[in-house]
Length: 235
Image 1 (tube, rainbow, N blue to C red):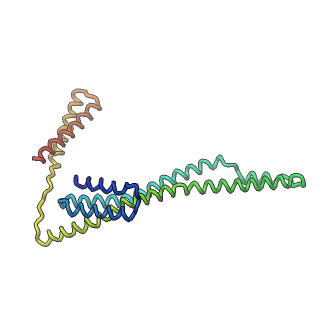
Image 2 (image 1 turned 180 degrees about the vertical axis):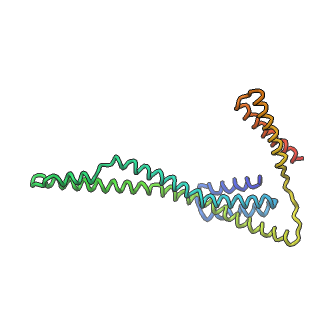
Image 3 (image 1 turned 90 degrees about the vertical axis):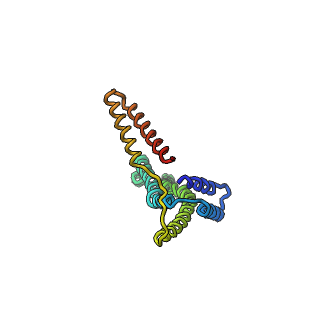
């Protein structure tokens, strides 16, 4: 999977160009992906791992990412609005008080002005509270549009990858022998780590070592186990 890091870096550079041309970005992205899969010698295992990685990204973005963001933003806004409602003047009570004042020739224009000011104030407050709920839409729209560029790259690569994997699977199903190239020894790695963790815990109990030192010993054990397996695989 190391080779894919170079591809991801190149695709990120294409997305972050200052000259924002959507067609050019899609063109450059597809050319880079095509070049990668035509020139690089990628194992079948790495390709299928990449396929699951791309599918996972697209599913997370569509099913979890944006719904969660929208829920959090609107949840905060609703709480903010309802918390501020208690500090808003009671317009019904103010209207009732105005209606209780007898209208005379001297105060008629003054009362009319108070009614107009109260109505305008009420309309402004309603507009402010309604506007608060629409504030997130511009940044969310920009976020969705900005994320679409990456999504288009992932979708194109996934289609190309599925096509190549289907071709390889058909060849292997029709008689071409598949050569297993993956060298994994997870059991050996886990046994080494487990032994070192047990030793660290025993040392901690017998020697009355602090919890922090025990965690440090466990971390050292994990690193040693990884290095042992790594050296063994490189042979």
